[in-house]
Image 1 (tube, rainbow, N blue to C red):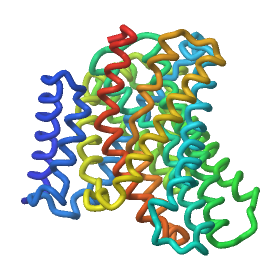
Image 2: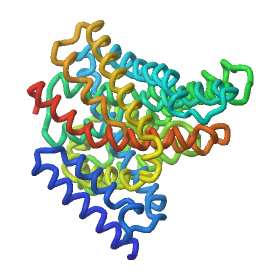
Image 3: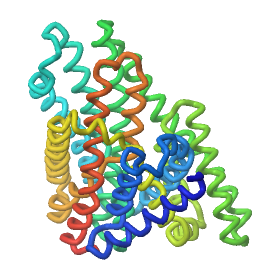
Length: 405
């Protein structure tokens, strides 16, 4: 089957299962992900194994649009109105998830991997626990965004949910950078380098923010020329700016998702045409982007590795949920947030997706982690399937319980 036919089939199957999910009162995102799993090369013989790797550029562009839209939800007056609760919740839910997973796996890994010699426990279990912990911190904000758009959710819970999900990627990236350096140091028996541990994540985070601000300002300046032009011209300009921003970050080796999200923040807060830009995305592009991204994400999952790590996958999901719910509850209490925020926001922090798989694949490519890479990727892939399938359902239930649908 030729490539164009496969792409058409992929989008059609994703769209149909999204509509079917809606008929069963489930979010469309659940149907999109299920479509990707069913169209996975390991399940569907019509799809060649090389197809997922050939669509990396499409996924990157879709992810750039999604993170740009997420950044567009961080409108400063709204954040100010929501108060310090966002920042308390973001820090505590991300870090509590990290520590819950690290602590939990330090206790259970010796029982889950009895084949590891006792003299390797220090160089195997501690690095593996640190790497798994940092992969549990980030949330997939695109799910909360997709569900919110689908059901037109508006209110304190949905705003807090989306803002926290967007902001905790920064904390997740910081945890990732520090954990990778610490794990490499333990495996190689090297002295811990504070400079490497903190300068590398600082460069990745602040470099991405700088690039995002620059391209956001460029986009704002450019839109002044075209405010009398057609919507088609605006789409072309936006597509070009996002591609340039993403590609620049790849070249500079800083975080692409944080940069495109920062672009969205700059546009929503400092562009006179912000309403036109984000309504344009919602009207013409959101549905297509969500179908493409979530369906392709399901195709990337390596189904064969999941049975080997079933117990670890379930424990990872449980430890992460404990950390997310406990951190959200403590953060909301410290900030004096409303009862609805305390009760419902954590449900929107369940999903995991694109960024976590990307970070896990980067770890797998690191020769230092060859002994722990298979376990790590198996656990992350399995948990992504579980969290991405149940995440939209929980998010919808929380928004409904909060009365914001």
